[in-house]
Image 1 (cartoon, rainbow, N blue to C red):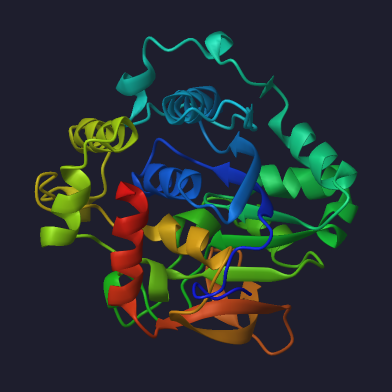
Image 2 (image 1 turned 180 degrees about the vertical axis):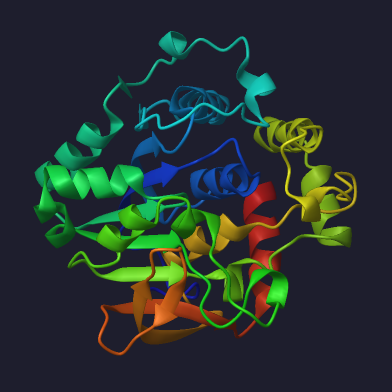
Length: 309
């Protein structure tokens, strides 16, 4: 895996699967990706719940970024719960997106992986029904791609709590996670041990909040809309959108897709339980896990610089 000190010699082809619209970190991660020269983003597919509205959020963000060359796909809609960010796209018509829109996002994902001549990176930022469905349709995608994502809780829970937990991305659809975590692809994950401690405060946050880029202003506008929602987790109720970010879980997964320079990695056998825990098991599939930070400050500074560049 490349170090940040290395020059970029070849872009990483990537398909992104995201549940943007529920927690704010997906939008931070998407914009981080759009500002990362390491990536050649081929397709972004929405996952979980109201996937049509999630796709509208993706498409509108891509239009603002001037990146309508990126294809978008509607993932499997499993339930309808109003998304905290939905007011931002209330009047947005997905048919106006100048780029390609796939109504079968899972099929588009499978076709792109199978037709691409090189290894594809599959960057997953939400629960895994889409990916499990893709494996059901074409198991060989695991031979032609590597998996990177924000999943699990291994030795620590949220924000450094001592006990691991059943996380949303795993526990929401544990059977899907079990299928994905036993497929024969190379897997790299950031569990809560490392991703749940990333939050920008003080001067780091102010640099982003006050950035005049239309894309970053849209991010902050979404953050303010999101904070007004009644659907937020209890630990977000006291957030001050003028002073701090929410927890930026998914940004660590984006980083891991091109570098692990500031993270301590461990190869661990991981087993997903029926109730959504990720247990260390020497008989289970070995996964590359980001277990500790070597330099969290360096990552946060890098994240800020990349967003406002």
